[in-house]
Image: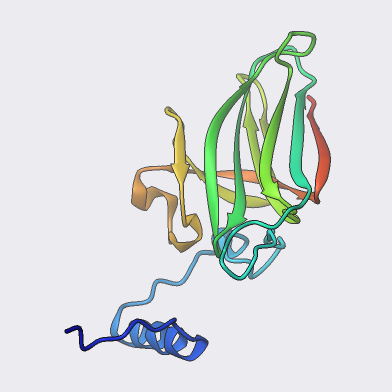
Length: 178
């Protein structure tokens, strides 16, 4: 016979657990670069609507079409807010203007509304200015819970300055120009 019954965690129990962890563990505060990741300054984290059971509701897909308006191939990394943390991913290759693949579509789920971070680079130009993003400069990457990192270097990645783009449900557009 099992003496323990299954209970749903409450706000109080989760808060108590977090406080216990903070008191008993060394807390590493974020650098100013990561304050955006944490939603403290600068950018507004996005959100998607969910049912109480965590399943997505019927809604409108949030897409961002990025078009390359340069004569060079561009590599793009992105970050968006999901499950209470920033999630970053890269690299997407976008062909030079006038080629078949000079525009690519990024999808952020249903009813996502908020800021996304975009970093782009070519052999001549880097796009970014507002907030930090952790990237692997050499290989494809995915970083879940990147807002919990105190420094990109702690996981062997590099920091790049990305720009913020506010998106809402439906189709959104961004061009990369010289």
